[in-house]
Length: 63
Image 1 (cartoon, helix red, strand yellow):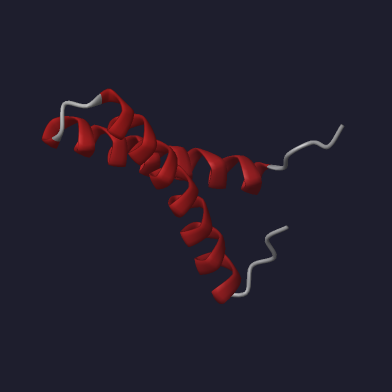
Image 2 (cartoon, rainbow, N blue to C red; image 1 turned 90 degrees about the vertical axis):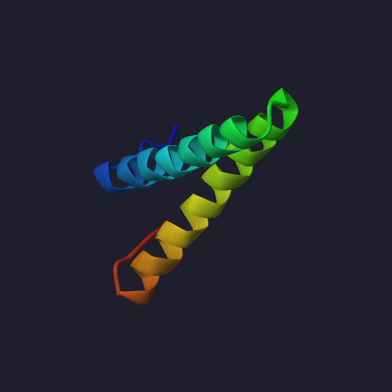
């Protein structure tokens, strides 16, 4: 079983925060639960890829 190092955990946590903010924003503007869940998921995935791309662009090794 693979273990996560500190950097990977921080990336996942930060992307979760971005996704949660996207879900909260959609919840305040649209009272539909399905849209909230989908925007939370999309925000989390997008946040992860944005963070990883930014780290790679600055020269940090991201696995």
